[in-house]
Length: 301
Ligand SMILES: NC(=O)c1ccc[n+]([C@@H]2O[C@H](COP(=O)([O-])OP(=O)(O)OC[C@H]3O[C@@H](n4cnc5c(N)ncnc54)[C@H](OP(=O)(O)O)[C@@H]3O)[C@@H](O)[C@H]2O)c1
Image 1 (cartoon, rainbow, N blue to C red):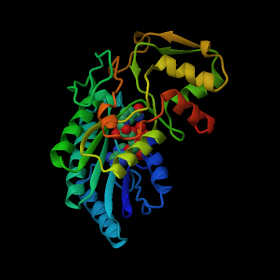
Image 2 (cartoon, protein in one colour):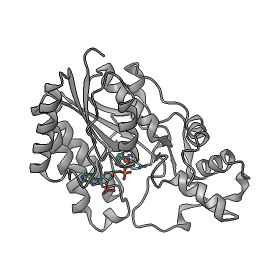
Image 3 (cartoon, protein in one colour):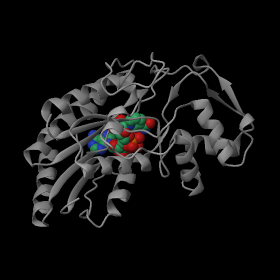
Image 4 (cartoon, rainbow, N blue to C red):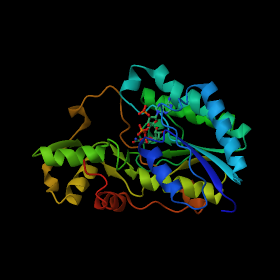
């Protein structure tokens, strides 16, 4: 990468945002990262976004930044709560990213907007390609699909929409941390076998997003997930194995066992076809990433 990169990370205290700040902060060719927490910047507040991005862009130019990039890791991620308050989710997941894309473009900055496997209906049997038609089942999925459209309409030549899936991290609540906690507190745990996806460590996704920007890949939609696929049951067993516990303490059940407000796609594995065609570095297999995450004792509570 020639010249220094200036990065602004929204949602910097979420799973992905935190890891993005860590990954970007370790690079000598990246200026000190601006990572506002939700209380510092509500991305749904257009006036605040315009002012904040303007301040950041001016500062970056003064520091001699060669490239400006906004990573939007902020989102309304309460999948079940969104069923009851879709307008609230829409404000953060669709209206805000569209506005962020327009403001980024006006400052000559690229936007990396993160989207979700939940934009797909989940009736596939092989990994979804980037160009597959979306068909969300849930309110959350609808708002994420609307966010993709808003971003690509506002800044088709500048913005990346990167779909990822089944994120877990070291520092925030996630399925992996929940399984680690239940391993300590329960004899057995029931986990569903009939939902398959692409478990992805947020730290690996953060590295992937940086690689996309550094490479200067063409704008548009990409999928970025750890390789391979698993059911929640298989992921839970893998967590138990990593912790040295008997994986047979994880009991297979079907989704009917846990009625939840938002329907989940049965099969939402993402194919990284375009990512691979662009020669971007593949993320490790989900099992390897899980091992690394847990070996670092990162995901332990
Ligand atoms: N988690 C997954 O399994 C998954 C799967 C596929 C895609 N994704 C996508 O990946 C991205 C990152 O997800 P994540 O798991 O890192 O989410 P997360 O841990 O829930 O973090 C989201 C962050 O956004 C912040 N936020 C919410 N509303 C905001 C607003 N109006 N203005 C500014 N910040 C706001 C939250 O702050 P508060 O908590 O203080 O509100 C939180 O820090 C999201 O776009 C998500 O849709 C996630």
